[in-house]
Length: 112
Length: 116
Image 1 (spheres, rainbow over the protein chains, first blue to last red):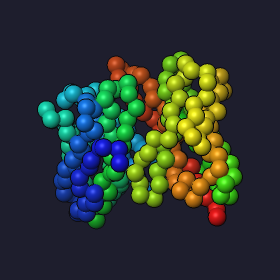
Image 2: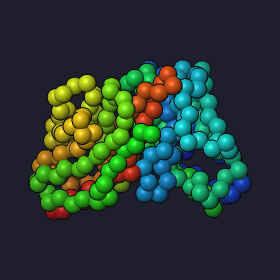
Image 3: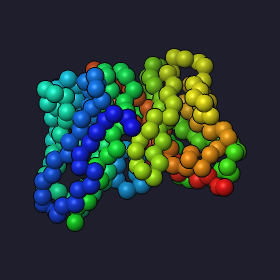
Image 4: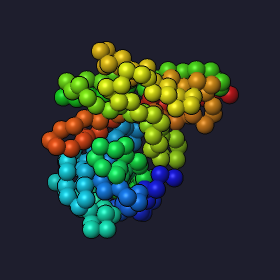
């Protein structure tokens, strides 16, 4: 158990819908990262937050957005969902951007 | 552009034997970190080992060790005395500093099968 929690574990929804994925970092970690892992693929970096502020953006679609709240938990919002958005979404956290990141268990999103 | 290449989609090893997973990367940076992550069937991403580029000594964590060849931009993972629980996807990752922060780039993974 890495100490990073993600909810929900599984999410099934329909095309065109909007969902919110939630992540709570390890105690003391200020930095949160979001990744997308499509079937049998590597991890694609989406976005990073540090202490409430966006720090880096990767291959994140305009239909996706994220934020980090004052209590340091983070949410990833996915809208106008398409079949291709079906994937495992990981959150990771680290104390600072220079420290090793630890991953949560992931949220499996299925878009039908 | 920075890339991470894992050229072995799948590897097999006999229980108790040794296996080496390869990883190469492309970068113009001189100071960076490299990581190996394990992803078992549970899909959890677990940090196995990390290496700082400025350190010449290869990192070791119990049965896991790396062969870091900075000039060749190679970062292979050696698993000794393989166990059934080592069966998983293994991802090599590179961390670079860009635009005032750190970004991670992952390879496409190597699926390791451990044969009893």
